[in-house]
Every structure is written in structure tokens, then in C-alpha cells.
Image (cartoon, rainbow, N blue to C red):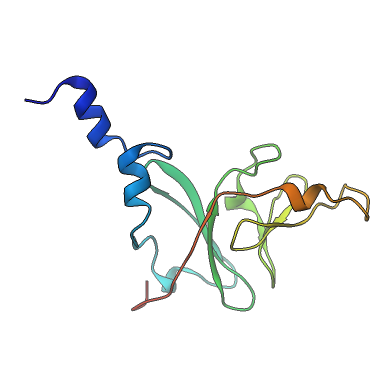
Length: 130
């Protein structure tokens, strides 16, 4: 019989937990490619207790990033997708499929703040229509 602590240690799958970090090393199907259209290129998903968004950019590449923008926690499920990534609907921060911040419209042109921002992101691979 497991103790309560042992059971929680083995069953918690959120980020930062041992089993959660182990399961994040494996591929999980999160969406069907047929669900993405020009009109609806973004789909929110929840997997392993984590809220994420899957999107297809204008070039046909897929990305999987955290649903909530690191700036003001606005939902990227309502964001805008372009050729390079997904843009937050609130202040316009743009992220690529690796979680790198590409643009921050309200910052000065010579600002390096965007280079220090890294959003939650996972690699995506199109296989068998998923």
C-alpha cells in the first residue's frame, strides 16, 4: 500500500513534478490537422494539466505554446496567427513555435527586452493527420 505522499509523487503530472517531467519527454497527439482552417488556425488544448494552444501559421507550420501570454496572461486562443507565429490579442507580443518572443510593439525599436522572454513551448510534428 502506498502512502499518500508516495501516491502523489507517482500520480501528479503537472509541470515540475517527476512524472509530469517524464511524460513531457514523450509525444502525445493533441489535435487533428483537419481541425485547422484559415478562419480558425488556433485551438486551445489541455494536456497533463497544462493549458496550451495549438496553432498553424500562414506558412503551414504548427506550434504548441502556453495558452496564457507571459506579459498579462491574456489567452493566446484569441490571438492572431501570421507567417512567423502567434500574436497576443492584448498587447501584441508575438511568439514563434519555440516560445521565443519576436516582437513587442510597445517597446522602443532598440529594446532588447524581447530577447529575454521565453514562453512555454513544445515541439510539434505532423504525423498521420495528427
